[in-house]
Image 1: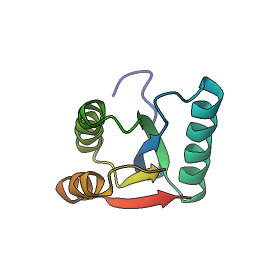
Image 2: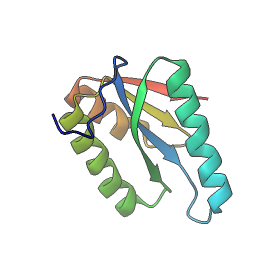
Image 3: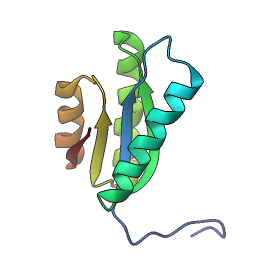
Length: 104
């Protein structure tokens, strides 16, 4: 393990937040903070948060990255906020053997 490695006793989670294509930085930041606070309250260490915006092509690429990171980290949860493609999210969760938590 590297000198800068962080070890957490909390299970890892990866987040996906919907941020509209024209969302301002403040809106995106607030959505990310809300997701991180939700993850913390649920007992997870949030490793990364990805943003989707409803564009099918971009979202597909983003969700591929979500899947790759979740698998590499052996994450236990996928935390989702906003109108994210639930079928794709559930497919990732099933493949990587994670639970999906919906942040409200």
